[in-house]
Length: 263
Image (cartoon, rainbow, N blue to C red; front, side, top):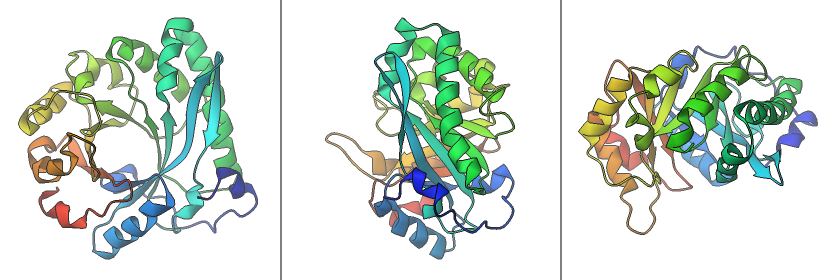
């Protein structure tokens, strides 16, 4: 893997002007070098996949928000629509009981500022920032406040998407909380901890939230999961016009043969 710090030494040649955010409706996350050939294969198949590159993870350690740098956006060829993905580790959950919402916002703002500062110094073309965080449902309101604050500081001027879970959408206030804060949410239906749910019910919950969304599916399995089964259900859960498309988390596993039913 190429460290993000390497950007400062070998920034990629800038590609074409970044497309509008709807060009990132359908995409693949890149979490390791194993995902890059899968992205190339997907684009070679004629599907205009965008790339969501995991550039950093933020941990809450010893009372502080600490960056762990991951991949460089330069692993993706210039010209491929690009999203920068910052993951908030589950350790961040602890901060809600130990810090005020304002303190959490301040700590995350500093962490994001450090990470995005490296990207800006390297003059990388990208279209949006995705914040990947499985926030506990009890803290959805606080999280919306934090994201709104970040939009005024380290994320000022950015197109921001957040990840969501089915359990989040079961909270009837989800749409009200986030509608004015983010461009949309990516509804993940893998490794969510939720009880099995019907794809039609997922689509209904997303429609009820009234917020633009994309469906996030996984190409990998763990004991007792059926992540790959969701590829055949995307038409039921990704309902137009609110759902723009499907994003794939491959975890190094091929998935093109599963995409026949994908919107």
